[in-house]
Image 1 (cartoon, rainbow, N blue to C red):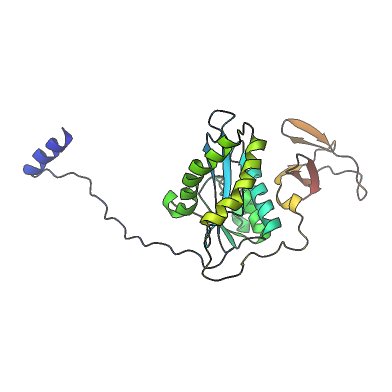
Image 2: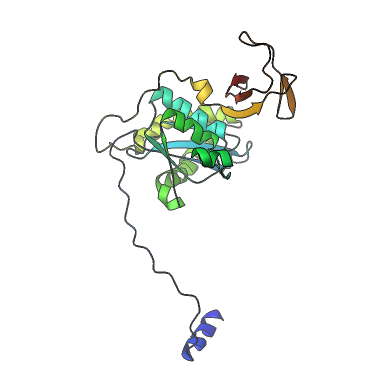
Amino acid sequence: SRPTLRRLRRSIGQESPRRRRVRKHRIRRERFCQEGMLLQIDGSPHDWLEGRGAHLTLLVAIDDATSNIPYAVFREKEDDAGYFELLWEISCSQGLPLAVYSDKHTIFRSPKQATLEQELSGEPPRSQFQRAMDELGVEVLHACSPQAKGRVERLFGTLQDRLVKELREANATTREEANQVLQRYLPLHNARFAEPAAIPGSAYHPWPDGLRREIVFSLQHQRQVRNDNTISFSGHLLQIPPGPDQLSYAGVTVDVQQRLDGSLAICKH
């Protein structure tokens, strides 16, 4: 066996060439002191409907100071649009947090290498989520391990026990029904598990003047208009009609906005 072989080799002075690293001394991170200073966000794919319907992913935001859940939503998968919906609802009901804490999923951090233009301008590549948070002045922090965002990880353990039972009792079979049950459950969960913050009051800040939610929380893609005033997008050619300020947009760089309501908008960059 392996332990016997290791003991025999040690007896003749043949130590392992590998050296065990000294374990780092870790300390418990204290909660942030006020509600709205930090939201931990994450998604949990799970058989929430226990075979009665499709597998869903639960997207959740939990306040670091109070363990309050300001909003959660079931989605078909973990995607940008789901997190935009999450922050949209929170910004309407609570305001904008000072920072959000996430893992290093490509939704939250772009895996692309910086282009030459980006390196010269000092602007690193950003994911759609990073771009939206920069526009809103919300800092994005990335956890280096699952343990670092343990509050939201433990939350999923609780929800996979308690929320699953609520869905079972309601006989939810679709995503729409699951979200209805979820919205009824959240106030009960917060009343049971939320804690008072060390400092009363709220650190949420209001929505910035001059910004529109449907634009900020949209997927934005740059395209260059062809000579025939068309752009290529998702395998389709989109024709741009003449505008009030100019007849032709050939050669102009435009932003294609995929909005949460399913519509498309084309704006000059």
